[in-house]
Image (cartoon, rainbow, N blue to C red; front, top):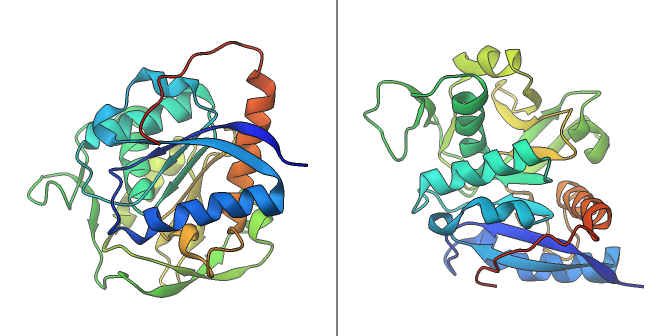
Length: 247
């Protein structure tokens, strides 16, 4: 039996030219049909993000950078992290999650994204030596992490559409403040990050929404959906209001 499962904010500047965005309706249909999870899903443009996002049960920061509002994307991540709202960030979502954590938690307030500010003095997100746009790559999963538990394998092939990644010289700064890197490529570059003490905070440089043909959601998307449903059940009687965004 399918039951109402909560409200999800899809934060991105929606476009028919972004494969990730086009894939989502089929993925949510699959979650309804296979997992019996039925969500109210709202697209929230980055320039419209505000504190009303606290009323959602889940936040997914999707690909599509450079965003029209980097500040809006950062705000969405901060709200989800600070309020314990299940958060999934994919591709640009991973990149901006690193920015938010470095700036807000680690105190590295001047770090920038190399795509939007290539001439900045302190780049946290930098061009990759080899672009992964349209490629698949292997991920080595760290045992004992949430990612490992969800994937159930030590090595996974995942699909990318990106050309920017994390400056690996900054990993220790992020780790020292609680961020866990739970997946790496064969060269040792980080591809998955999580916060163990958060109800659900998982972010990937690859795009799990592009796995397979879209008929079976990736384990990370399934886990995010169940975390959203759990939060919705816990907060159903609180009477919180939400300002609906474009669906």
